[in-house]
Image 1: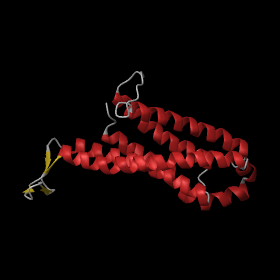
Image 2: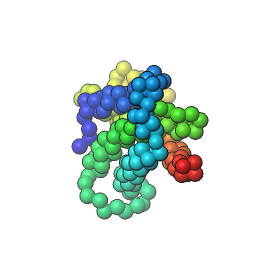
Image 3: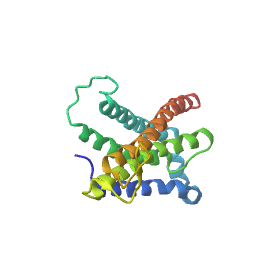
Image 4: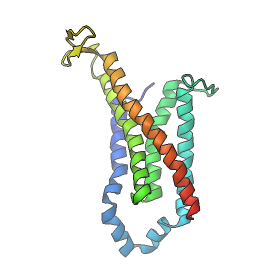
Length: 204
């Protein structure tokens, strides 16, 4: 069973709370530096970064397995993993929010500069494109029992204006937009992840 719209709204709010420290870090990091320098030093130490980085990587690998499980048929990859597609989709969503939290712990809310800043924003794009897309899609599914949305004009192939868009067509259009955006960002994220890991070991 898919997560309900109310559950997805709660996950969206949790994600917003997790992202808030990244906006506030210019305020609280100087306070940390002045009032709790030892704690800040520990949180920025290589050992702490490696441990939380490996935990983040485990989350990413599990997410990759979930992607293969979800897309296995279309990619002609066989995986004998128990559980329905909807269960794996639900796990994928919850783990995605969990990964946001782990990244917050790993970075202590500091976006970084140059490559790391871009890498972090790409990751945010990956997470939010999926979450917003699923929320919008589920909202349409649960919004009404009607099969058509009469308030939206739909132009048929012959040029005639149809008085409404079917729920199925609207969901397909929305999915084509958010899912393609998500897939492009995921591809970019994995390329940058490899480079990030390389730099972490090269400059360690």
